[in-house]
Length: 137
Image (cartoon, rainbow, N blue to C red; front, top):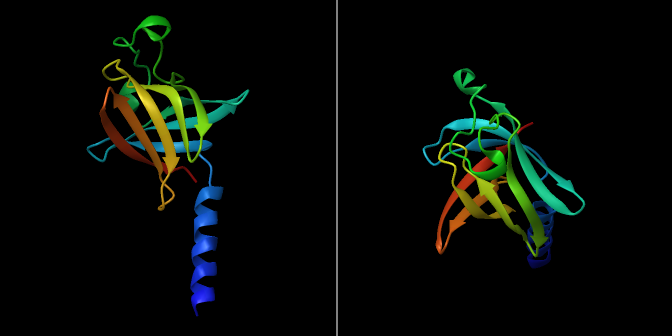
């Protein structure tokens, strides 16, 4: 019986770690609202994510007026909000994520949790906020 349970736990942990962060994810804000779909992809070993769908049709043509630098006044649809993340152990980090609603840029950590959700954690110093995004099927 112990062997069976050990094998089951091993299989479960391998199936979780085998899931990757790449693909399309339904963003869900801290209030539980489904806001957009972000496509996460890799280029030359570096991870990026861009908004490929905005759920609120009244905001489809919105510009990132609060963003700074090269992202200022760019359309939010198509905006690269995740930049420069790299795999580091069980996480993807060392990159940034932009919140187009307020223009803030945060340090980033991404991981798949035990429910198959993408854990998106943004850091501002030692303070952080976490969202859980769902894979688009």
